[in-house]
Image (cartoon, rainbow, N blue to C red; front, side, top):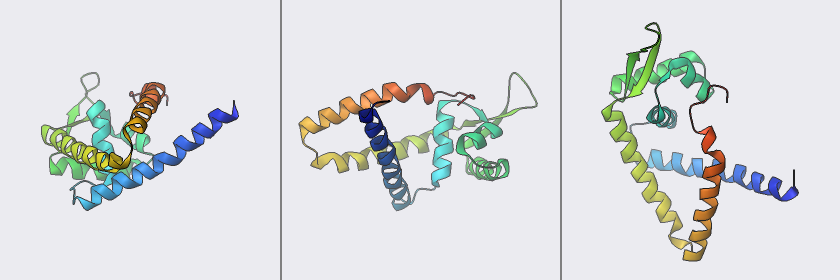
Length: 150
């Protein structure tokens, strides 16, 4: 692998935690009812239904930890439990309309805050940034689709 690719990979890996810290701080400052792990669950459920084991695996937490998180989210009305159509023994989790609305509202708040951060960036640099982000999205989109092998 080329040294240039390694430098770019390192830069990508360094910026992701910074962006996540920024978004986590924004989530807390807005007095959102969601914790960062709950936001992660809602984000995954916006893509597709998951069972509890899949969610725990995706988040790298134990089944009891995810069960507790999901139970709170069900009680809040953000997530619902449904029996799988393929196997009635399996319980799938899905967003409720309330959960979808909450996720959209937080997404809009995040967009506003990130846009504020970008006001100091010159227009030509914004175009460069957009091009780079589009390329990153192309490279990493296959990994955002529900894939139990990842």
